[in-house]
Length: 397
Image (cartoon, rainbow, N blue to C red; front, side, top):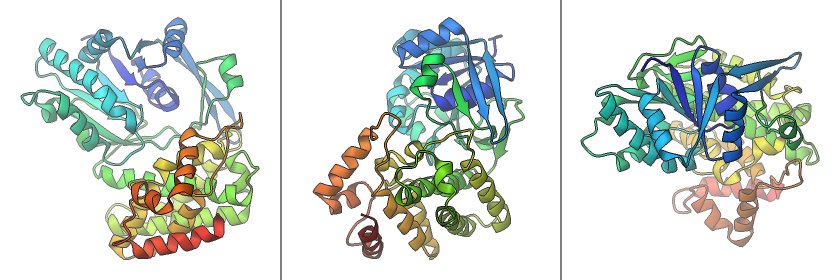
């Protein structure tokens, strides 16, 4: 195993603009695995791709060289690559993790056969809580009980803070491999998750209490992002970009209020990890990044996928549960969440996110069932939350 390379499941925006860029510009060959055959063919044809970094006052193009790709359906090639990889990453989304678990398991078994006792670290570049436990359970189901999973596989949880906007059809036509992203390039990872040597990449920020940092991402960044989109859409439904609605002081101040209340919850849960001062600095930095005009992040991208973002274990409901636990006020979270139920933003082609159409259909047919099945609200136990939410909904719907 003399060739150092990272195998990345998922050649999407984060896979290319963040994980691929970080490792590709620090001496690693980058091999992607993806289900999009045309994308795989193009990656193999060009063997490189550009990342356009956009800040409020500059633009820079970074070329990631020496890359290749494998179609996800080519199981033997994928297994062979897992067996020989220096490190691995997955950036496919929570719903796709069960689908890739069998081939990952096959690669792990092949690796153990070829290189007995050689561990493999898998960076979980997913926007979810407890990604390590979730993927471990998926792998456990398809690996033999005799395989020493905890010893040989490092499941490295991350906090993905980099923002990468939707790529327009016009940009794709010009270069189907080009991706756009903000300058932020810090990858927060769980130090305890590694089993092998930690890559010597300066942008890796290793944390001991990873759960706290995943929650900081979920309950300040993700929560604030969605709040800005939902409250901005309420105020200006014709706006396209996030920076547009955050020019409105009412939207900006409400978004900041939600984020600051979330900071109080985080301090109550993780008193040894965070202070209000460092969280306040983080909030101000995020609000500045949200208003990056050159990035051109859309309200549609930030707010869509209501089934997930208003779900029982995501940004709104999860922080409400933590506020309940710590006996802190959660009314501002409910107010922000209620605006999500009225969110019907459309993409550049005039289309709603397909799952959002289904969400609104479910709401029209049976609101109480949606609150229970999507948001996890039980009438017998969550009467106060349901009452407050319905009160807020009466003003936004």
